[in-house]
Image (cartoon, rainbow, N blue to C red; front, side, top):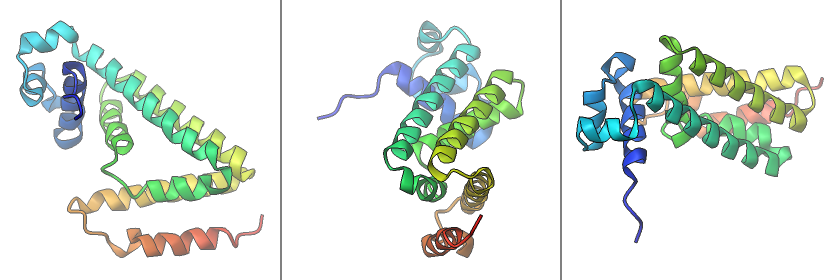
Length: 180
């Protein structure tokens, strides 16, 4: 039987969920505490400010990105395919955390912008090691970004043709035919 998530984990989850669903302005300490099922005092016991919550969210994103990079490094021949296909899963822990940090970057958090840039550089470097051609890496990353954008528009889980897994497989096959 699994353990209940720690209070710290629940607080960071609540912060992330509010950022994703309602934006930064809605992520008040009161709202975060309520979503996590703790008192405001319980929240401030663990996090003295929203900046501390943001730091915990940044640490979470970096850990999730590192795990993603390890998957890509473990099978370099499939790294580009993995990157593109994983862009479909907008509800994954990585994508939800990435979206929450993106919401902070859209506001007044330069650290969020720096972290997102660092993460993109890390993905680029791993893809570069796997693919070996800078323009192909840009193509793969921009394709993944576009797939993510279109998949996130549905909101209902329904897949438009552009993000249908069979369509993605055909597009990945086309990438393999490009000569550079």
